[in-house]
Length: 179
Length: 447
Image (cartoon, rainbow over all chains, first blue to last red; front, side, top):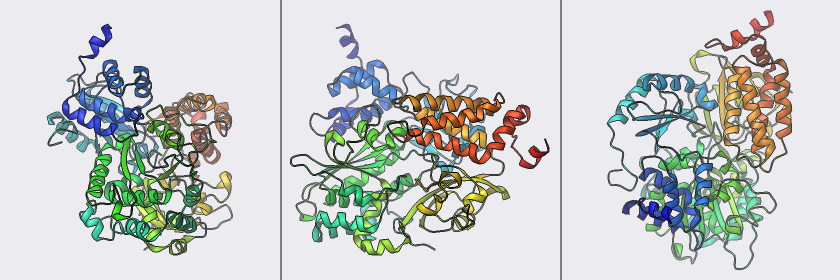
């Protein structure tokens, strides 16, 4: 019962709930579980770029399914961060085609600039550096993704510029105005 | 200049909007199909066109459609596979981003042919920005009466939704995609039953690639006979090729099947040759899963014939000396590329993406990554090379879905064609791990 009390702390905003309801309406009656992935994306945008167990419990409650059904999905798909992250998560592609165009050098450059290794967050809390596998941007590598945006054809100068721009950026949620 | 069936208008200003798309002949296939054809006639047309699935497997699209079961009282579904994740492939993303209405038009015409009343586009989660482009375009199609109830007064109704994945290559496999669409982990299902009988929510379902569905409007508008005239033999029509790697002009090119590989790589109309004035070492022609070929074998078959961009020519010689057209993810490696390091990145990819359901794939991909890692980092043994071949062999054919094969082939092919480069890494670990070191055949012979 205590857990139920804890759960009440997680509340989606009205904008996020409207999105959630819209997605649930896409699936046949009784198949609302289909909306797990869309809702986890909404949850990650809503709660600082990661999903906590409490958030997953809330998703289960909304979908009227068991929490384990959400846990097993959230841990299977690599886009969901299960630990707190910096203000921006830099997801650098490093698979073969990007490697051919210099992703190793890009990762090294970012590690030096941010003063942290892959998997870590910079001391100022602005950036978490992650590597990911192929993002379907092979003709424009090396590249990385931050939330929904691709930064492509990066070299040291444009990567530095990107870091400056991101530091100054106000992060908006997809359902907010001016997104 | 080859004909452009899909991308003719792709650079027209505002083509992503309904009005501009419509002005350029958009949605004509919906009008033609719904007003003048029966669903069976549309299926027959696609069957007769010879269109083969553009996701990678190359299975005839019309035949896949004709397998769809039609039991009474059960809905049928069309699901578009927009989970484009095969390394080297980015054509579907380009098409959806620039021409969202072409995919939507194809979905409506194809759904009509299959008798689907609800259809889904399953797009990889990393492409949420493309999902928003598609959702905007779908809203426009609803507002203009091309989606929803009683489309164009035909009595046919259709709802179309976009569904994001969560970052899992395996969901490009159609049964894993359906599991994922049901809100589960992306573990592929055993087949049979095939999705045509037991698909989404246990109902008959067709899963087709973006490019395949986007080709349907042209076939319906211009007839199967016209389509079959383009290309070469069983490689009918055009194909979107994602060109990447060490070339001067990376990008997506729509080619008529049959263009010589040499022309595709070196002509300014396409890749524009190798960057930085270098020579070419190797090519992966159809996405990371297909066998790598060295320069001489990608340009000419073992019999000395010019290699063409067709399903048949690229696979000429089997895996011994040939490869596959696959998804059309075509990436070129220059003479400064370390094949060992490149193969290691691919092995790491498949290890990362294995769903973990079948032991040969779950364990084998991990071992291949580890062994390649130690060869690349100067700790390899000569017997590791045969160990890799042995592991690859034990994965191949022993898994529920083709990810196992897809993981085994690149490693086996790299060793088949570049064994000397692997041996050099083992024999000269210090030289091989020096910054920027690349195997040089001539020097290696002297050593």
